[in-house]
Length: 609
Image 1 (cartoon, one colour):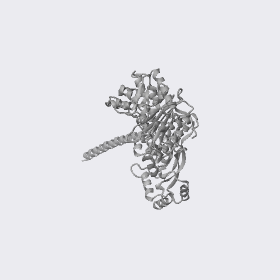
Image 2: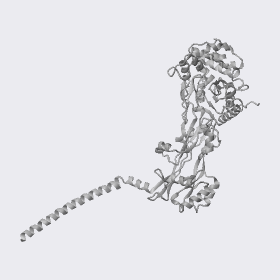
Image 3: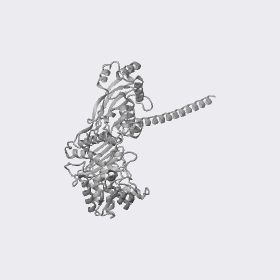
Image 4: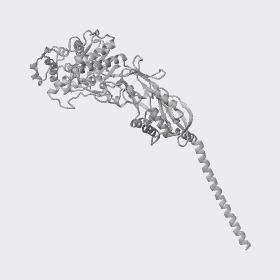
C-alpha cells in the first residue's frame, strides 16, 4: 500500500515538473516574441511610428504664398499680389453656434444658410478638414473687417486671416494675355493634388497665369496646430513662412500693348458707328522677327483679370462670356480666312515653280470674269478695272484677276506646300493656355479641289489661319527665310532676382526661296504701303513699311479685315498682324490699327486730324 502511494506521488511530481518545464518554455518563447516585436517597433520602426504619432497629434495648416510678379520687358508691373483680409470660421470654437452665425449674417450681409453651407463645405464630408478655417468672406472690405473685429468677444469661432490676392495695376491692359486666377476646381484638384494643391488654393485658369502656374504659385508656408483625437485645435506649435512665386519677365512692351488695345477698341467703335455694325471683335499681334519675341498680343473685347478676384460677379460674368466673348483670345485661338494677305504665298508658289514670270501681263477687266467662272475683282465694284498688270502690280493693287490666273495654273498642293513652309496650318509653338489653334491649309490628301475652288484658294478663301500664325509667317518673309518660335517670356527670376530660366530665341523653320523671289516680295510689299492698297493708311509715316492688306469674305456677314506687314521695310524690327472681324476692307479698317502699333514702337506721333 505504501509502495503504491509513493509511486503515485512520484508520478504526480514528475508530471508537475513536465508541465512546469512546458510552461517555462512557452513563457520563454512568448517573452522572446514580445521582446522581438518590441525591438522591431521601437528600434526598427521607431521613426515611422514617431512620425505617425506626431501626425495624429499635429495638423498642418497651409499659409498661402503670394504669387509671383508678371512684368513687361522694361520691368513695368502687370500683375502682383496684395495682402487683404478674409473672414473665416473655426466652428469648433463656437460657444453659441446659432447666435454667432446670426450675428455674422448681420455683420457680413450674408444669409445664414450661405454661411452654414460654407462651413459645411470645409468641415464635413469625405474631403472635410475640420481644423482648417472655412472661408466666409474673401477680400473683405475694411468696414466689414472693423465690424467683425469689434465683435471678437462675441464671435470666438471667427478669425480674420490676412491672405495674398492677385492685383493687376493696369486693369484691362493685357488681360486676356495674362489670364486670371480662380478657386481650384474638383477636377483640377484631382489632377494637381499630388503636387501639394489643396481645396482652398487659387490657381491660374487661363493665359500666362495658367501656363506658368508652376513658377508663379510659390511655396506655401505651414502652421503646425496641435489637435485632439477629434481634430479639434488645442494650440499652435510652430510656423514655416511661405515663399513667394517666381517673377515672369515678359517680352511684351507695355506701351506697344496699350497702343494695340486702344487702337483696336477705337477702330471697332468707329466701324460700329458706321457701316459695319457687326464689327465687335478683333486681334493684333506684334513680333520681333529677329528673335520671335512677342511685343504685343491684343484681343478685343478684353477683360480685367481683377474682375475674377476673389470671384467674378454674375454681372461681370455675363459681360465677358456672352456676345463676342472676351474669354476667347482671337489672337491665338481664332482661325479665319486670310483673304489677300495670302497672296504673297500664292505668288511664291508660282514663281518658284516657274509658272509665271515677273514680266508677264494679266488683263483685269469685267470681261475676264468668264475665264474665271464668273469670279470678280474687288475693284470692279467701284466701277474701276486694273487693266494690264504684271505680278508686282497685281500685288500692289491686290488685283484678284492676277491671282485667279495663278490659281488656275497652280495645284492646291503647290499652294499648300508653300504656305506650310512658312508655318501655316501648324501651331507656332507659343507657350499659352488654352493651346493655340492650328488653322487649316488643306491639300489633295484631305479633299478634292474643283477648278473654281483653286482660284479662291489663291486669294486666301479656302484656308484659315490665326493672327499669331500670320505674324510669324510674315516674319519669315521679312527675314528672308528664318521663322522663330513666338514666345512671351524672356526670363524667369527667383523672388531674390536670380535667373531661373532664360528663354533664348528658337528657330522653328526656315523657308528657302530664290533671291529673285525674295527681292520681288520685298519690293512689291513695300510698294503696297507707298502707292497700293495701304498707301492712304500709311501716308506721312516716317518709317518705310512693307505689308499686305486683306479682305476675307465670310458669308453671310461682312468680310473680315486684315493687314500684315513689317517695318522698317529693308531692316525689319517689328512685324504686325491685325484682324478685324466683320470689319470690311483691310486698307480702311485694319491698317489704322497696325499704324498705331508701329507709331508706339517707333515713338512716332500720330497725325493730327
